[in-house]
Image (cartoon, rainbow, N blue to C red; front, side, top):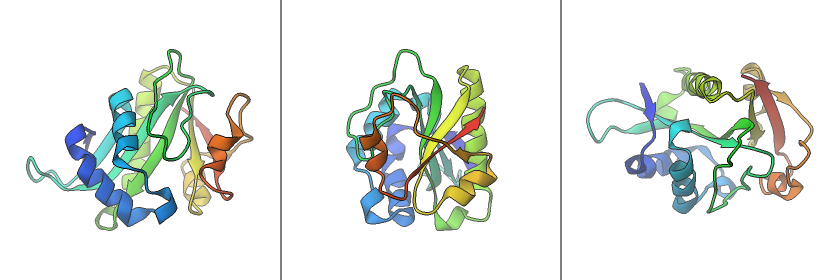
Length: 169
C-alpha cells in the first residue's frame, strides 16, 4: 500500500471506506470532508493500492492543525485553519477490510506525527469513538481532561462514549 497526500479526487474512495468502518451516526457528509481537505491538504493522507490513476483507496487519515477553539464538532460542514495551531488533531482514521492486518493505522499515524513535527506542533490530539481507546493507547495516546477553551458541546457531538486523548509528538 502506498501512503500519499489526499486530494479532492480521492473523496469518493474516502467516503466508501468511511461507510465500511463507521456506524451510521459517525458518517460525515461529503461537504465536511471537502471543507477539511480544503483547509488542511498538507495533513490528510490516503493509502491506496497504487495500481493506476484510479487506484482504490483502502485507508485514510484526516488531520487538522487546530487550537482549542477550532476543534470541529462531528459533521461540521465548515472548518477553518487557525492562524496559530497548537495541536495536530487526528479527526478521522479509517482502515478498510482489505487493508487490515497491514499496520495501516500505525503507518498513517506515524505520517501524522512526522508532519506535526515539521509544523512545530507539540501534541497529537483526537476524540476516540467506537470503543477505540485501546487502539489509540497502543499508539501512545492517553485519555485527557477536555482542555480549557474546548467547547464541551463539540466533544458531546461524538456521543457519550467519546474520549479526548493526546500524545506527544
